[in-house]
Length: 334
Length: 246
Image 1 (cartoon, chains in turn purple, green):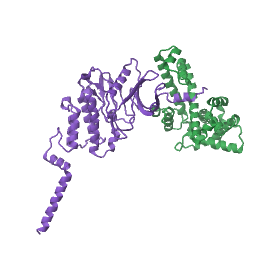
Image 2 (cartoon, helix red, strand yellow):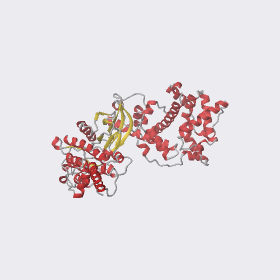
Image 3 (cartoon, chains in turn orange, blue):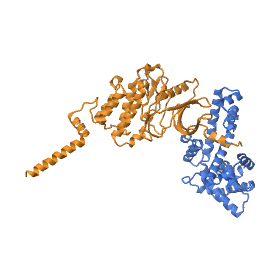
Image 4 (cartoon, rainbow over the protein chains, first blue to last red):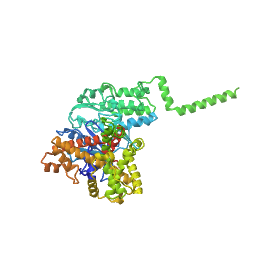
């Protein structure tokens, strides 16, 4: 019988994992696997730190997928922002597959994290930080096109990171052609059967995103129609998810101004949506500050209620003062 | 790894259930499977932990499996409390200590005669490994040693089967590549392999991928044969093909 050395045993242990021989990385564990590729936690031996390594797992006969992975890495490299996972390195495995490494994020996915947040204001602050990252990408001419809870990570220090730019698109006015559509990621939540967790890709130029989060124009597969408002649509769905704290009741009871924001953001027609991320973020900020939002006309009671909430302490103090004053007067004149 | 999550059909009675069976044929088959998987790790473990001579270790190994059978030790195994591997190792400890105390290692065998125990090969392997006994004196390192030897035994038999499969399907080239890259002590690149086998790089890539898939399938089949339940199989498969998390 063949005697297997310790080295052979090590190799056979990882017979399904990428061969990192000749790279500066040592394999640790599989983080996620999708339809086309996988992300592994690896140790950067030179810098003694853990990073995430993304590599294709699909056959790539004509090199098209390799080009797409490289483009994804380049897009990420352009997006230096605290809310966007940074790329560290690109390289080639001994078997010829291209990989890139990025920050290894320790933390929770938004869909898990948001359920732990009790207060609405905490959840809305989280949403605003997602908006910051997306607005930055838009300013650099990049659309995410797959914004959903599973693609947002909350780090152990509370940092919010928008992940998985595999479906990203560079806008035409920033020097790319309309066909420069990147169709890399199909990250499927392993433990979940919820269709809203899965990115659906049907082929080159026909991106469907994730049911429940993709805009109607994405669902139609018309890449010409897709612009920043497609991400706005996803942000609207994301906002709704965040507001209800991850729960998915049949008829979630949302504060009406917030509901109006969600409805505006997720309108069927792109023209009926917010024009950019700043606008939706501004409305959410106004709501948090107890001010009227641009997309909702309040009635008197609602206005009173909002003002009461905003000046609750002052109103209570004044009321208490007036009641005491009335009591004093009442007993004094008795 | 996905191995743990894959469904693997139970085509036969689980090995432990079969080992406890009243059916002599079924029991013999199960014991053969178990002994084939465990005799070498047990032998090496006895040699190193108890510093026994090759002859005494051989007697103890055969005696242990006979004891396992005669005293029905497998029926006392509780999968909820430990892994079969750990249970067997503890049984070996207990058996070897008692036998050495009584100094009555008699050659025994009984129903285990079906499996040819190639002790000289096990000795050669121990020599090739050049293990420093001082490095494995702690209980944890002994446990690790036993586990590693068990994996080595399982993988070795899977490699042998892969060799046969490749021969039967006329894919000897794939096995040669697998041998040269995955089993070799040398670090060779795919490009070097392509040059020495006069194959395009993509062919090397494809052949290696196929051989690894086959190896994994065979190893999992063999693992499945010695697991008592699907849960245990899933756990062990994950450990076997999972990635180091040290």
